[in-house]
Image (cartoon, rainbow, N blue to C red; front, side, top):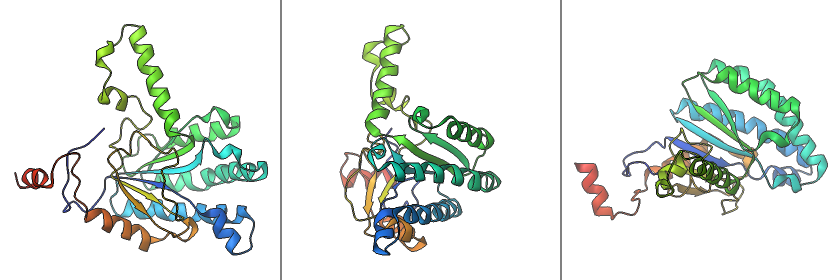
Length: 251
């Protein structure tokens, strides 16, 4: 869902989305197993969540495990699942104390029942928190998200709950996994790659994109503030001219 236009004077994004890339390469550069990079990456994630909360960011969505990541070596996938469990146990109490609402988006049916139960418990514990809204995209794909929304709309039409001509941008946005949040204002990808990799494809339509060569384990307060500063310098036009945006801001 496209929000109202904002000028370059609006320096703080409401919603940041991040692809946390480079854990494996960070480990390889240090002649460590890839799992060491993932463990270091968990520490970075904890720090960035805290920093976003301190800066007044309203929502943060992190791409933790894509639907394509199952293709990785089984040992690495197993380690990622173990880290997932450990991070949940370690972080959920702290997040709750800091008034963070934690939610997971994606197809969780592929996870073990134990992990599914832990996910559900963490969501229930933090459900009524009103601070940073933290989404973890796990076994998530942007195409999957759109397909699920399309299926829901098709079912609503078949059951007479909506008409065919009522299918539009708003109807789709109301059915995707982040329907209760504004679309990301700022998208960050670490690790030097310059693509979306099937992440929040519907939601990122008008997001400002920021790419950095810094690998995720090394991503710090400096890089986060650099991305936010870059966002602050951009004029978001949403199809309008720059003059129209300036007129709206001055109105």
